[in-house]
Image 1: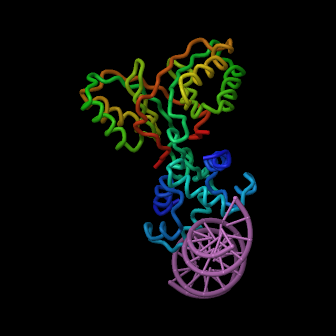
Image 2: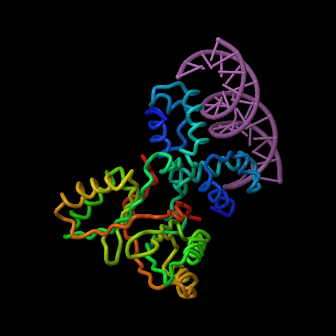
Image 3: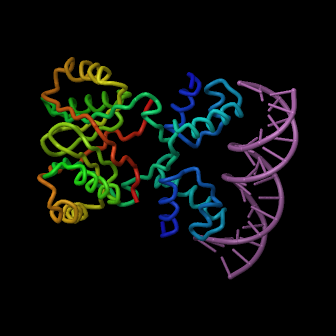
Length: 149
Length: 149
DNA sequence: GTTGAAATTTACAGTTG
DNA sequence: CAACTGTAAATTTCAAC
């Protein structure tokens, strides 16, 4: 892992459709050399996967909601149970288990507030282990990248 | 945009390296038909872009931090200024402008708490327009996808 | 890491339902 | 108008150096 690898990663995390040739010109290598490095970066897991980023608005899922959740009981079994549910819920994009006041932070995308209401019914009210939750509606997705470098 | 397009999008948002042939078998079309649809989905913006997801831990940026920020003054100019700074700050992965108690929610990745401390110095303390901010450290990234469908 | 050939994948015609 | 067939081009892959 040298500076050339980092250069390649920086390009790929913004645009995974770049050809090896385009990358090779930017980093100063031959196209096959770039391919060789890409293969290794995928195998070692530095590149976890390559994905298409879809447009929520163009697909009618225009609403982003942020929820802080505090559990009633924080035993290992309860935590694992909640994590599993969040992983399985399609509208949950991100779920973080955190220090601080709240136990979990969720980022959801939904079509409308009605869909969010259904989510809270299913996962918060019908779930005896939720102590409290606090909802915030996103007015502007100022930045939403997964860039690491 | 029909159900076949949605099938293609669902596959692509999890793995953008799938060939047109592999997709064609899953959705029941010929490879060229899939390519044609992919081209249209990119042109219309349903697919915004394709990116490599890097491994924060393998790249020594193992720490994820969530920050709620409350501004002192919420004028248009101050808001835009803050948004611009967050877009430019490399360790800020995500920034949301929200309703509710806080004005902004940030998700950062840093190498260590020292790097976070430097970030707060540069952006919160040397910035007279920050009223308060609340930090939470992520113990478990339970789910982190950008899946829309 | 580079060069060069083979295989896969994509792009673009023309054709059909 | 959208999907299939065949051909040409580009890209990736793999060998040898």
